Amino acid sequence: MCDKPCVFCDIISGKSPARVIMENELAMVILDIHPFSSGHCLAIPKRHVPWWHQMTEEENAALFTLAHRAANKLMKIFGSDFICMYARGKRIPHTHIFLIPSHEGDVLDRFYNAMEKFQEAPKELSRIASPESLDEAAEKLK
Ligand SMILES: [Zn+2]
Image 1 (cartoon, protein in one colour):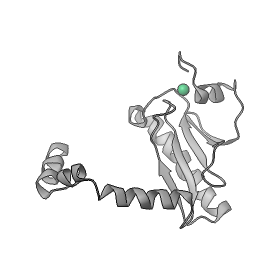
Image 2: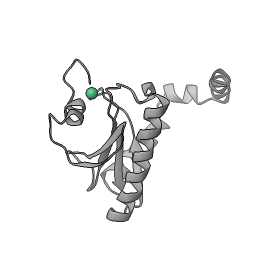
Image 3: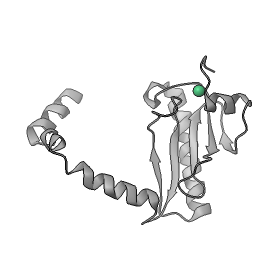
Image 4: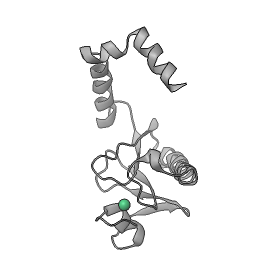
């Protein structure tokens, strides 16, 4: 639970309705009400955690175990090419992992194709893609 109004905390507490697909002690998978494709789900921790990297190891394991289970179910039920997974969380500051059944050429596929082309275009990004910059970033992370 959290002090500020949060749509996901309201769902977890039962205050707001949701189409719950599966849950465990620390996490839950619900159907997204604004789907990119049929079956689009969100995996959320039951504790209010703004960013996914702030979850405990136990929450992380619980959330990704459910996400993995849901992704395999989505593949089977919706016959997707793959399940797109991402976490941004800027609009709703309660960790949510997008699980989106995806097919080649669908809305999300076209979006990511455009973004990948964009990723290689800007000059400011080419600077950090130089071998020296990549070596420096890798060295900092080791
Ligand atoms: Zn919350």
